[in-house]
Amino acid sequence: AHGIYNLNNNSSTLAADGSITTAGSDAYGIYNFGDNNTTTIAGDITTTGSGAHGIYNLGDDNSSTLAAGGSITTSGSDAAGIYNFGDSKETTVFGSISTGGERAYGIYNKVSNNTTTISNGGGISTEGVDAYGIYFSGNNSTATVGGDITTTGSGAHGIYNLNNNSSTLAADG
Image 1 (cartoon, rainbow, N blue to C red):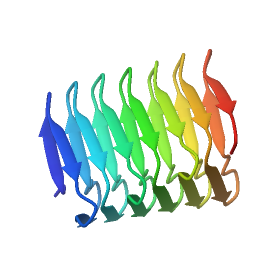
Image 2 (image 1 turned 120 degrees about the horizontal axis):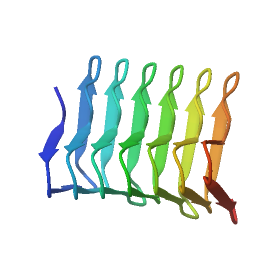
Image 3 (image 1 turned 90 degrees about the vertical axis):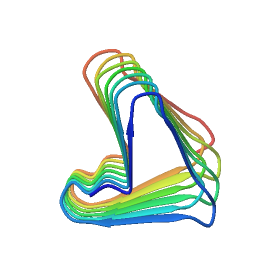
């Protein structure tokens, strides 16, 4: 079961005093299926379970904003804070993402033309084997880091770029 499920052209906002908690395999906090979904989180998302992503964007042209004071916490193998699958995603983090588990990436961008910004004051913390802070698997994707990325675990890189033309700009982080 998912906390919120959006199908095409929808917007979700989780207010500062709101929370979503899920448990179980593939139990996403927010699941955006399709194109042009917009998600803004000021509250807290907590997931427990294998593959239980905080936010899962499947489709193109989706945007996710984690506002200051907002948090995403996942516990479980392959449970990313934010998992973007598709082209042209925009992810902005002013709050905090914390993951625990093998391959539990802070932000996973799969496919191309994705933009990820970790703003000053925002941060990602991962703990687990191969639990990268930000993982790009595709072309022409960009990370701008003004906040902190902290990883603990064997092979857990802060930012991992796979394939051609992925670029990383670190500033003020």
